Image (tube, rainbow over all chains, first blue to last red; front, top):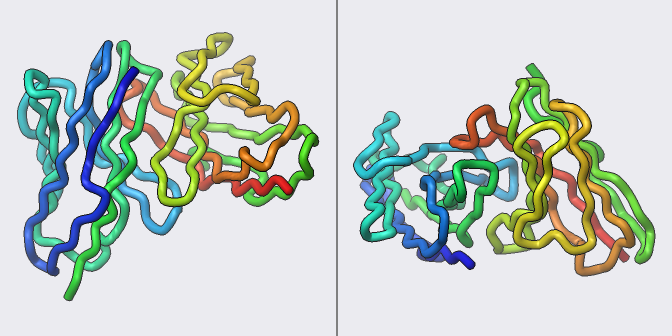
Length: 110
Length: 111
């Protein structure tokens, strides 16, 4: 089987930095990705890590350590519009099978 | 480009009825998937496809069928609707399985 663990809720203030952690247990691990979802709308793709290390895309960065079965999403210069649910997801067996965690609800306060 | 198009956006079914949720993408993506999302929950994989003619089961396949006769279309069939299938259904597609584009969802209520 597989499992992904991420915090259910995180609160931060505007302009701050927040890190959302994700640990996983799965066979056939191929990569870790992150998605954002506002108010039950369509999830949108943020980043993908297939190799260990940091990937940076604007204000968002994502990190993966395959040896620790751990990754995180780092959001910098938080804005009110970043309030949303964030999901980590593992790609299994070289693609096709993308399994999601339960999601972290991020609240950004003024 | 329209991206990933799901129809209908809303549907109410009676227990025991069958229906097909439609999903079409115009990006020539090989990978397509169906998910359901229940309140306060993550997305659970129902079925997925890695190309035309190839489908496989996800985490929660019971009660659902899929087929992939073309690259563009990936319909999800509910065989005999049950109240437990009340959920929001998302279809998604990807060129390389690294990043998926999601449709806007179908909100299904089974009474």
